[in-house]
Every structure is written in structure tokens, then in C-alpha cells.
Image (cartoon, rainbow, N blue to C red; front, side):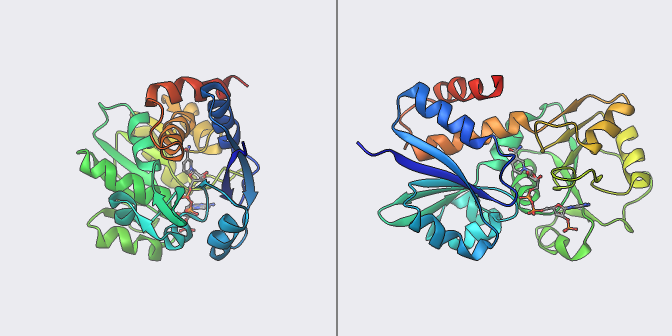
Amino acid sequence: MLSELFAIFGNPVSHSKSPLMHNFAFYLLGYNGCYGRYLLEDGQRLRKTFLSLGLSGANITVPHKEAAFEACDWCDEFANKVKAVNTIVLRDGKLHGYNTDGPGFLKAIDSSTKTILLLGAGGTAMSTSILLREAGYRVAILNRTPERLVPFIQNGFECYDYETLPPNASFNLIANMTSAGLQDDNLPAPISILQPLINNAKSCIDVIYGKDTPFLKLAKQANKPTQDGSAMLLNQGVLAFDYFTDHKFTLDQIEQAMKKAFLL
Ligand code: NDP
């Protein structure tokens, strides 16, 4: 019997742990699937590439989540709300889109957190901000490019750029949701802005995983508890796998199998 094929699309994509996580889960749960990676430079080619590769499903990472939303024939309510897709499943020749990033982040953070500042205004910030607000958190967004804040302002979020952030701004949790630090040594905002924010915060999280980013290093220097994006990665992967395999396994079974990928 032929394997069902899955892949992650992104640019960059070589860093992604998703192939290891999903392949571990396919193997340990006895599901006939195989998961690879695809460096996609032009998001407009996502749909054509997905179909020509004969995939049954895919994950989408930076910077193609908005393009993935456009590429789908149908999206669930949450993906329609956030207009960003990180999981696609092929059903009856149609691309069905979901977003598991928001739920993955929500599960990863300490529920005693009340106020959160998201650094970045891309697809990840959009999906998490809406879910966090629905869960009762006060959420604000800080982004380098003011124009990118427009959809967040339209959604009623508290938004700042480097010029408008008040000097005494204070949040329990500062979350790096930019791609600064992913492939470079950049901080997600000027140090003069980050340092007081970190000092006023209880803890810091970077959604980038598997490395000590400049943002996490700065937070550690300020003696703040820190967390990378591994827990979010695992949580979003479990939910994506559940869609890929049409709810054949419990979330706990998937999580236990996928966790093994983090031992390597
Ligand atoms: P997008 O491309 O949609 O958005 C990128 C954001 O990063 C923009 O707000 C951009 O700001 C900002 N940015 C990029 N470089 C810099 C810089 N040097 N200084 C300041 N801001 C910068 O990305 P995504 O939202 O899809 O992903 C963001 C990050 O989240 C990636 O690193 C990705 O790997 C990670 N991620 C991790 C997950 C996990 O499971 N752990 C899940 C999902 C994402 P501007 O508008 O000014 O360009």
C-alpha cells in the first residue's frame, strides 16, 4: 500500500522539526504516512505545488500562512477569522485549511498570565492574538512596520510601533512572534525598547525553537524565566496530525509519540 505523503512548506524550512515529529508519530502509531519538507519561495505557487506533489496534507510556516489561506477551497471558522493557515488537508480534491498555531501557543503559556505583549504582526501574531483575547487575556501588539498593524487595529487590538509605545508600558509576558533571531542574530526590536519591557515583565517566550535567540539571551540576562517555542511546536503539531489522520488517535496518543522527536 502506498504511503500518504505530507510536507511542510516554508522559506526557510531546513530548520523545521516538523518532519521528525510527524514521521515519529506515523511510525509509532502505525499510520502509513511519510512527511518531508519543501522550500517554497513564492507563496502563490503553494496550491499548484501541493497538488503536483500528490500530498494528502501539509503544514505551512513562515512566510506563507496568509498565502496558504488564499490557496484553500475551504477553511474552518478559526482560520477564516485569522486569515492565516498552517495546516492543509486534501479532502475530495479540495484543500481544507486550519490554523493550529493559536491553540498551540495558548496551551504552551502559564495560565496565570494576564497581560501579553506580542512582538510582531505576522500570521502567528494574528492567530494567537485573537485566541488569547477570546480566552480573556489583555493582548497588545508591537511591530516594526506600522502599516502591518492595520488589521490588528481594525480588530480592536491595542497596537504600537517603535514611536508610539509608552515608555512605562508593562505586561506580564513578552512574546517574540517576529522571525528576528530565526536565521540571524537580530533582536525583535531596538534594545532601548526591549530592555524596559523585559524588566517590567514576569516572563518571556520566544516562539522560535531549538536555539537561544538574542531575545531569550536578553531576557536571561535580566534574570527572567524564559521559554522557547518547543511546547507551542509540539501542541500545534499534535493538532495538525489529528487533522491529517482524521481523528483516528487520541490527542494524548499523538502527543506521546511526537514527544519522542524532541529526544533527538
Ligand atoms: P511572518 O513572516 O508572517 O511575520 C514576520 C514578523 O516578524 C513581522 O511582524 C515582521 O515585521 C517581523 N520581523 C521580521 N524580522 C524582524 C526584525 N529584524 N526586527 C523586527 N521585526 C521583524 O511570520 P510568522 O508570523 O509566520 O512567523 C513568525 C515566527 O514565528 C517565525 O520565526 C516562525 O518560525 C515562528 N513560529 C513558531 C511556531 C512554533 O510552533 N514554535 C509556530 C509558528 C511560527 P515587519 O512587519 O516590520 O516586517
